Length: 114
Length: 136
Image (tube, rainbow over all chains, first blue to last red; front, side, top):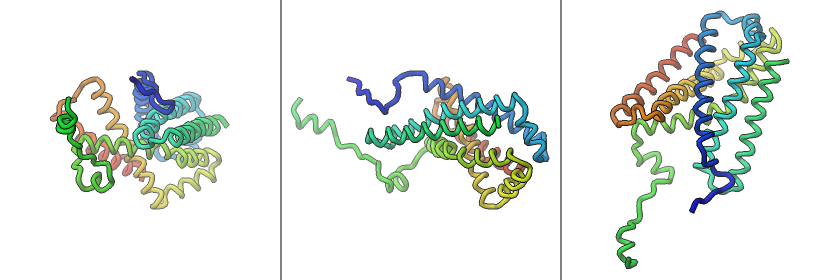
């Protein structure tokens, strides 16, 4: 008998795969970002502002944040499933994590397109 | 099966779930260390955006705010914290690539798994030093 609980995993391949795909997206962004930052030294306010004024940088950074959101949700939920056993507490923490992640994405959009 | 026989087969197994056992008794093999560090660094990177987004927000607000953040990032406790986050990112990055290969059934035998664990540990520390040295 399978014991499906509401705060458990979704018993599928989707999140597992999503975590790996988002990992690759973030890895590519990181390598490019490090390269850009190391080759544009010294970083003054002008360099910094112009970098984030470009459309591709804004979209790429938003893509990074959305990837992070999905990736972190799967990861943090795994941690909660391992260590937090009472279903009510786990659900409450999961909601807190989701709200935090949603706030990260909202804040990122606000920073990038102000 | 008689109950006595069941009891003989099902011996109570030792359960090492207390903190003392976790710290002093269990000798975690190297790939295990990579794994738990992957989890710890991941948890750290989940909370880090609160701080990092705050700094990004301020740094893009105005030139004065940018210079303020630059000064703030130069204070040694801030530098040290940032360096910890850089390490967490590098470790999570390197260990993550190792897990992607493990997912593809590459490097699952003990010898290779140990070797790649050392590589992950070394590469993430080297990357941290390289980035740390470049930033400061």
